[in-house]
Length: 341
Image (cartoon, rainbow, N blue to C red; front, side, top):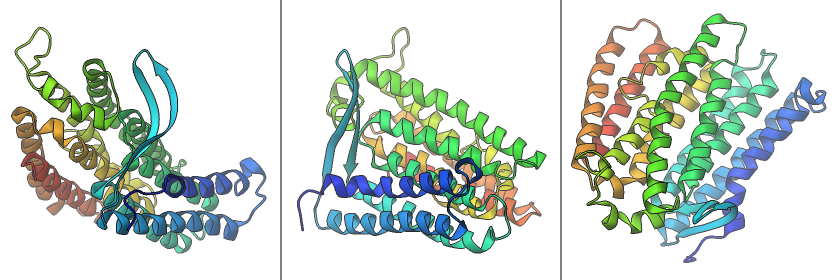
């Protein structure tokens, strides 16, 4: 097996769903004059996600064989000593997530062919779900916090478009606005955490940040007796609470079932809600320095796992039962992160 992975091959993983999304979104809709039909739209988007899945599976196979990749591919801008870059970090955590995201997305694309058959927005829907796949891949493959935040916000934006896909239904419009606003609350904490990391380490790159953990560990947050690492981790976890629907920022997820069923499968059962879990596990070298933050993670996870399970029992609507079941399972994952598992 190769010791390193090929950058062009890795670049093809997020870009192939993006290409399918752009082609279907422009040429398959009224916006671009409906130049290609439904069959071409579905074919292009499914092909893009299929290519991403095959490349992700090959990448996982290489990673199991000992391959590793951590490089910046493009420098967007440099402000003082702070570099803002686009790059990939491929290790076992990333490779596993890539396969899960692309496989679930491929299955959802195929299921959509039958489910959305009669819908007017057929091509638009395929464009959105492919765009979501691109955003999620950029999030999990990033090697720096700027790119992670880009993917983080992009999945939030696409989920807003998807939850409110049937925009002539007042309940769908209410649900997508609720999801968007609740996620903004979490994202405010998340960007504060990123800002503190950038201010004290002078870098947004994971490897640079983790190399400076020994310097960060003893520092106190100015004007308080709190450890700086604790404040950073709590801010980051607030972001994860919004995206992964942890108590008390869980309220958006049951309502978001207003979107078409393939979206419930893609966003609220498999991929987007695991973004917060992924981020906390990716930043685990920081979380391990703060017992307070880990205790908070475990407590919030336990509350979510227990009470969302209770709420699921008393629901009548099958999609809401599944939503609360998902919340409960996410709570278990969060408890595992709090236990440093």
